[in-house]
Structures are given as C-alpha cells and as structure tokens.
Image (cartoon, rainbow, N blue to C red; front, top):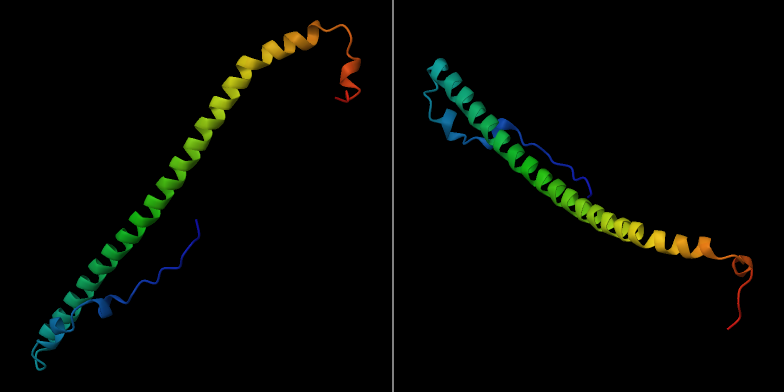
Length: 108
C-alpha cells in the first residue's frame, strides 16, 4: 500500500469570496465578520476533505487486514492438516529398524 501525499488547501481559498465581498467597505465590523465566516466555512470544508481522505485510508487498511486474515486462516488450515498427517508419518518412520535408506538415494 503506497503512501500518497495529500495537500490540504488554504481555508480562505476554499470559501466563497462573496462571503466578505458583499460586506459594506465602510463597515469594518461587517467586513471582519465576512472574513471570519469565510474562514469558518473553509475550515469546515478542510475537515470534510480530511474526513474523506481518512475514510479512504481506513478502507484500504481494512482491505489489507482482510487479505492478511484470509492468508492466516489458510495457513492455519494447512498447519492443522499437517498436525493430523504427521503422527502417521512419524509412527511409520519410528517403526523402521533399518534407517540406512535415509542416507542413500535409491536409483529408480
């Protein structure tokens, strides 16, 4: 899972400039209120963008965890199969009295 770089945009660039352009230029309080509102709207949009990005990351992480869990379950099934088969092979090997066949390869 490659990491990608995510750039968060400026909160004032995300807001509609009409929020503070519509204010009366002679009323500094209304202008400041419009700029503050634009900043608040921008911050809310940033939070929304970050929430979408986090949801995408956690979705990908969830898929990776499911794939790893699936591999773990198949590995567990193979180990359980070996646990069943191993005593039979061990019993056959231990019951042999001549172990020289382990040292030499038979040519067929």
